[in-house]
Image (cartoon, helix red, strand yellow):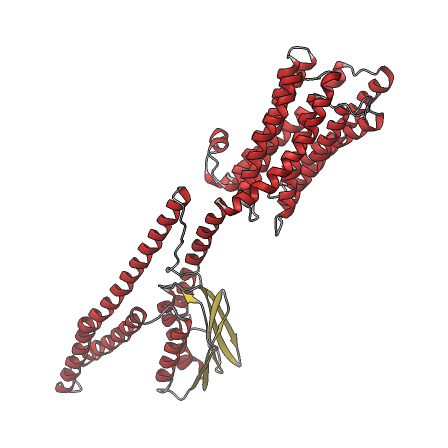
Length: 556
């Protein structure tokens, strides 16, 4: 093929295009893509054809004018993507300004392309000032995009205090700022590329150094942008992507620089045949790395890592019996052993806490509970011995009432300690038993119904607070509603359990001349525990619904 005479310099474009294609494929493979992922696809989908066209421009003998048109179009579209994404990542910052910036860039790019093509058609040589016009436009676009990412960093950290650009570039505070700093840093590198191109146009830089530095900086930008996104993406990414990326970077860099070192930047007609070999070697090497390295990783590194991840997920579901069996004796093996020790320690501490809970409940019942019962009995005997009109009778009645109330509260506390109080079914049964016993004192029919809640638990403190809330609600039904019927129900889902008390009485607004704490206490408890509290007041009855978060049970 006499028309296809690639130079060592054109191999650099092919190498970068191969890396961009690999990152593009990994982006397309991501599941549940966010808007940011599509922006990254837009960036690589515009950068890839720009590199391929540049490769053919440098490889085809006497490239046609249409190829130059295509080169300018793809390069211009690539920078449109860079500017657009700098405004749109994570949130649409400065929407009007983004359109103004895009339109301004397109206008200036069209002017620069017109001057460039005019020189090409009329003089077959591009004037230096027109080359500098393009370079200045690219520098302005990249610097402005970098500034946009810095502005985004300031917006995300606005509520965190003083903003330090140096600190955020070196030690990002959040995932978003880490991504923005990676993008901004890559754009600053591009301005360095334009500076080297400017020096080369002035014949101040030797061709070999120019081509080597240009390639290394360009491929570094490609890899840096990909790593920044795959490290901090919202999607579920794989460690495999970064290992393949860094391997490609190192391998293709070595392969690409070989013809430059051996044959120079432009090569000679005698070396063209050797350069064509590298046109085949670069994509073949890329394919080999992309297919063979993931297989090697999956059967060595990722196989063991996935076992540890599965163990972590198992512990996250509450199963503290999870154990990871990894036979290797490297860092992953040590990590698995420490993971097993951690789950063992958690299991022991949880068993100790359960044992302490049972001990506290027993001691409390044997000591404090018996003392309260003794106080109540002694006060009752004293009340019987004194005359009904004795001045101490009100005080003794108050002692008996308070002792009974304290004993009832202690029973709730003991039940929480000594039973599966984090089980919604146990809690519902306890509230049902209390409601039946309580409403037997009044002319109120009480019933309860609920499906079984399987595989979920309440938070530790939720049960006792729900007991206090529904005792208050049941008291309000008996004392203020005039209801003849009350129904307790429970609705259970994977994320929450909803306890509902419904009566057929008439809601009465509280007397504003007196202080009332019942409803206020119910609302305060719900706010403090992050319960969803709803009270529906109708003439046909009142409905109190409390929704409580649930989670997967802890298995010991």
